[in-house]
Length: 72
Image 1: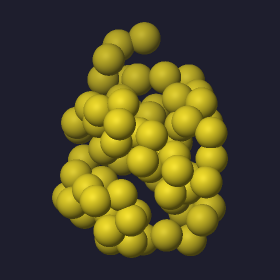
Image 2: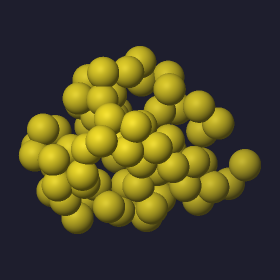
Image 3: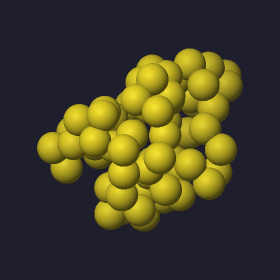
């Protein structure tokens, strides 16, 4: 699988978990100290977040990081 597809899958996983928690991109950004624009770029697979950002996102979403990494 290409890196582009892997990043898209990661973004889909993050977005679906964010929506499941009824959080806006703005609220996720605020809770993780990431800009809303960066959240958008991560969710669309346009940037590769650091592992520390993924840990922060998983904590805010109250899920195991492996949920975000499924099919990545």
